[in-house]
Structures are given as C-alpha cells and as structure tokens.
Length: 327
Image (tube, rainbow, N blue to C red; front, side, top):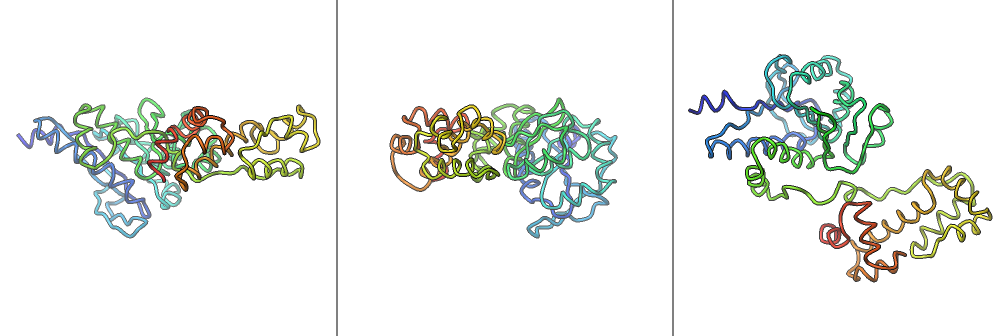
C-alpha cells in the first residue's frame, strides 16, 4: 500500500545552489511534506519532495546551513513541480549555463515551475517569464524589471500566476504562501488549512508585500523649485498641498508645474502627496497609540474612511490591520 502511494506521489524538485536562501527552500519543503502526511492519513497520494543540485553536491545556504541533495535528474523525466529559490547565490547561479539549460529543459515537462524571491531571476534567465507579469521580493523588483524588460514586474503580490505553468512568489516566507495555495489546488482547502494551522500561519495572508516594504522616497528633482516643493510636502504631510498652492511655491503656472513635476519626479504631484501622506500615517500607526481618526486628520486625509481607502489601495490592508501587524 505504501509503495503504491509513493509511486503515485507528485514529484517536487527544489533546486539548490551555493548561497541559496534557506527559507526559500525549507518553507515549501515543509508545506509539501506536511501535506503528504495529511494525504497519507486520508489514504490519498501526496508528494515526493527532493532537494536537487548540480552533481548532487551538498547545498550551503547563505546562513551556513548545509543541506544534502540529489543530482539534477533527467529534465525529460516525470516531474510535477520545480521550485526555484532565491538568495544571494542567484547571481552566480544565473551565470551557470548548465544550470540554466536544465531549468529551460525541465520546464516544458513539469506541470508547474515555481520561483521564490530572487529565484525569479533564474526563471527569467531561462526565458520562462518573457511577456509575463511576475513578482519577486520588493527590494529586488526594480533590478528584475531593469535587467529583463520583457517582463512586467509587479512588486506587490505575495504570489502571482505568471503563466499557465509558471508561478512567482515574493520574498522568503512568501514561498510558504504559494506552496499552501498549490496544495489547496491539488488536495483541497481542508488539507491546505490543516498544514497552515500546523505552521501557525494564515492560509491566505491579508494584503500584499508592499505593506512590509520600507518607505521608498522618489529621487530629488534636478530643478530647485521642484525640490523645494517635495521638501515642503514631506515636512508637512497634513498641509493642503493643492496643485495651485504647490505651483505658486514653485513660481509656475499649474499646468506647467504639473508637467515639470511629473517629468522630474516620475509621478504626478497629487500621487506624490498621497504617497507621502500614506507613509506618514504608516509611521504614526507604528509608533503612536493615537486614534486612526486623529492620524487621518493630522496626515491630511480628512477622515478615517479616506485614510482607509488610500491604505487599502496602496498597501492592500486597512489601517487597523496594519497597526495590529506592525505597531
């Protein structure tokens, strides 16, 4: 009976390489093996999960943890899921032609290929993401977009289905979120929920990864009047900051000011004001116990409902949820 279950198990290959991020590998590994225990308890087929590497050499992670690995199997062989983790070692791994050739060769035979964090670089290098929307760790999204212009990079989702067979996940723990979603597709919600509870996790994490990202301020404009406007907005997020008022500060007409500001800063004045206000509210939600209504007024939103709408649109969570998570 056990042998039959193993024969029918879905094979999951987790790629290892020098300098890989440990949790990118171990997180999905725990989800798939946990789901296998659940499946066997219910007389169903689970997963055969293996760490593989070039020539089967032990995999040394970025934090010094070493994992044993099997050699890379024949790419034309039966495989269900291939997991491409990230880590600082991806910069070297992406330059290994044999490794990239194996990824390119195994992808057409796999039911799905999954990248985690900067593992998206490996998928991109192998040509799996051209013409697709993909995500990666928020801190590395600009680099991925710059190096692979054929890919539309979205830095917010925890994970995203990039094509019919390729999934991409955000950084580190997001590999667990994606693995849980795949288990749910394969074995059902009860199986995935059971594994999530065992891991003390949400089955579906609220919001996107933008809520975890450090504040990103736009580069300073070249022209002094526009820089002065940026500094004035950031110094007093709760100010009126109408286009007319900002244009007067820059000694320009509103239309000319809007055009120049957008060219120099990279986004329109109204969007810049909104982002500065959201970042100011984020800090106050983290650092103070002030009511949301007070923070909303102080940061220029006027009402808590306006603050909530802006938070949900930009961060994917409400101010109350954000405070519970990060305060």
